[in-house]
Image (tube, rainbow, N blue to C red; front, side, top):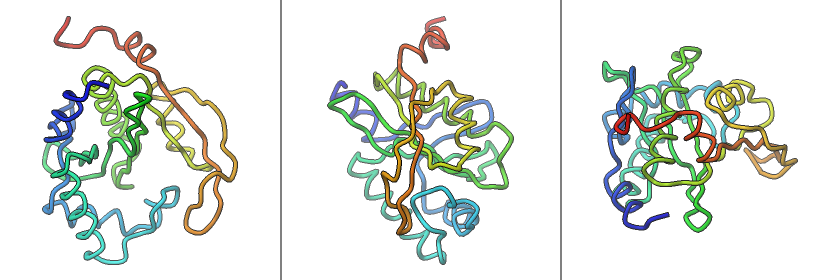
Length: 198
């Protein structure tokens, strides 16, 4: 991965616009919209974190993200509808620069599921990851039982690679997760030239 490209992108995370969405840095003004879904057990059932207990917990998380943005260490976008409503997050949970790969993570408010919105957001992050960052591989770790997330991974072209049994502790319990991935070659062959190259 080219160091200059990495620093340029993550020193000031770019705004990404899709047909229905605007992906941009998560900001303090997203507090109430984020808490609206982060406080629900339904939202975090298959995630590593527990429901937010109050607004202060959400405010603290957003404040942490602001520090990470300033350090150039955060690859997480807020997912916003074109009308400005904040409905979730998407981005790189981890980036392995030595091996030129990343792990994608995403969270969507239950109010906005089954509309293809997160598929749109994930594809936008793939586009940046493969074409701008030059990643070779993007992975998703999905806890066993999270069938909605598995359907999303398949819909965006990721391949199932296997189950890692009891490989992670989540909320005090050993959990198994399914590993999905997509390679740059697969993505670029499926999508064709970038819009600006056509």
